[in-house]
Length: 324
Image (cartoon, rainbow, N blue to C red; front, side, top):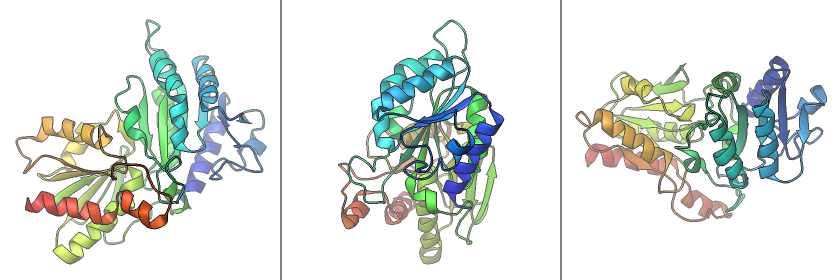
């Protein structure tokens, strides 16, 4: 099953289990079924609860937040994750605050789905990874789709937490197979954390969100075959709040965080900060952070490849950490 099919199946399951669940977004209804076909078949099966909306991300998110405020479950599809910036006020000043600002905890089941990332030649305004702008917002959870974890489990976890969440879905993953991984590595998933490695004593541990996982695995293969360096990959589903304690048993003395965001105030920087506090006495050197280049993402394929985080840069970061 491809990742897009798994996500589509997860949304079918959510709407079937939750009679008060709604899905809203631009062009989500059949026969179009969303820009990336994630919502295909949903409006046919649930015509009164899957609604195509006008082109206004702020309005769509505000309506969904209102539904969630009354006890419904609301899922929003932002056609391209870049446009979630237009819903920032609804997320920051309404949804995230509504969980706690009325004097007692208020359940608010809102999921904002954001197809994200580059690699498809969509250009500067349709290729960004904006996760970092939502890290540290009280009351808002940040998730990223993983090819190693069933999306039904992720959506159910978000609903059970009863807090608004932004769910980033790297567009490159849509066409990949679920659980597809380099056969050189064994992959296990437990408590929302995927782990891929060769042995129990890696030279370096790489922490990455789901959209970067395959690039990290490619770097790990090259490091093993060319340098005889063993690495472990950790892929958390929930980026924020991050369960750092769940990472600790899997870490060694050399750690790299890899992400596709542009530099400055990133999720990786937050992870590094939290790990420094807990591991400073046993780290060989500060936790490394590697990301895409600063600047707008080009449309031309060869320039886009140079701008975005790639396997070679992850491999270089590991080598620098081990040899520095």
